[in-house]
Length: 355
Ligand code: NAI
Ligand code: MG
Image (cartoon, protein in one colour):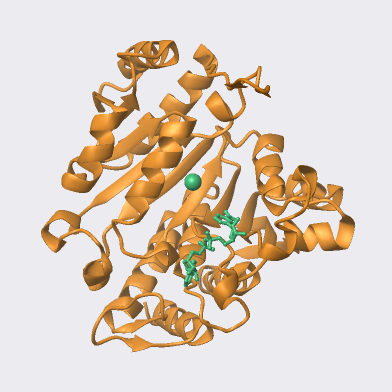
């Protein structure tokens, strides 16, 4: 297959981890006979420095001409005092909005070799394997009116039926490729948007008779995520609940450096990026854990290109390297060899070439 990928490294460790993911993609291309044409472009702080715009037109053009987007991370203290429109994270918000990437998908899977670094007890964290599907382009963060006066702050929570239908359908589709269970999280005992949400889930489930559905209130879901996370397969929820629950779930695996994510729309186009930020404290030191970026590239192959075998090969290669006892410095598990970013990537590629 021939595919064009927009590569947006961003700031801090972003370039280091995207380079790593690109090397892995090149190895896959060689091995499976694909051609990946890469278009590098700027986003975030580096784009502000070069073009006074966190999402320059050239970057949008490169992404529009591509089949998927691979992104590193944005941000750093250098730009913290910038006005809103010149802040690095504005680049991220704008790119999601521009391409209507309404579904944020975050898998959370316990990694046997790393259970020791999870803050949860091993018997709670082991065998966790879930995906959180968060609505990303509507809800409280975008609703109008949004205002601040001397005496009050106002945010507005609005969801249309259509916005709920498309995110719920994404969750059902993903559940079909997994254990076939969807947990829809809302606050239907209080919120009108949640009552509509629940109604839509009930309507849509008729189209997916093979998927089991349960409804859960968000406060209860927050509790169950840390007391009994194994019960979840696919969790689908609105923007703000998803923001909070996905961060909560991210600690289960023990390292931010291991978590990939995707932001997609219904036609398969998507943006793939690690969950972590630009980690300025370790940038440029060849210390960053490239796993989250590499696993994001695997998600891209699976979700946007339908390359299931290739995606699984990448995931298995990363897990084998960890099982062989190699890791980067963020994973403080006893008895492991701490290696540099470059060395870790070399190990993953050796593993891919062996498979
Ligand atoms: P962060 O995720 O960048 O770092 C938190 C801690 O985890 C740091 O100690 C860092 O060294 C470590 N860490 C993160 N990723 C790692 C990796 N791959 N390997 C090894 N260690 C890793 O979050 P923080 O410190 O809150 O934010 C730093 C900057 O990143 C800020 O400017 C923030 O706005 C931005 N940010 C960007 C995001 C994005 O681009 N999607 C998401 C979150 C934060
Ligand atoms: Mg968050």
